[in-house]
Length: 108
Image (cartoon, helix red, strand yellow):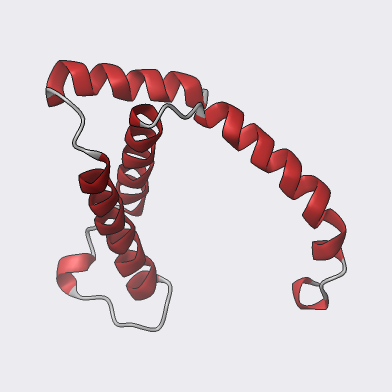
């Protein structure tokens, strides 16, 4: 799905099921919470922390999707065309970082 279509799908869901968007500050807090849940899974499953039995059934994909959902909400309510912004960022990173990463001895 294109990012624009994802933004439209989130907007439709909010208007159909969510009544309205939470305000931007609330959504920023939601985003922080969701990123924290992703961090908890990564730290315990792939990092050095021990995974608790209650964390074993946590779905990383679902938590990442929660992050994307809130990011799309924030983009919608602030008038950002995230597809355009993402394409621009990818182009910039490609120009800026291509040689830099190839010359990084830590990555070979």
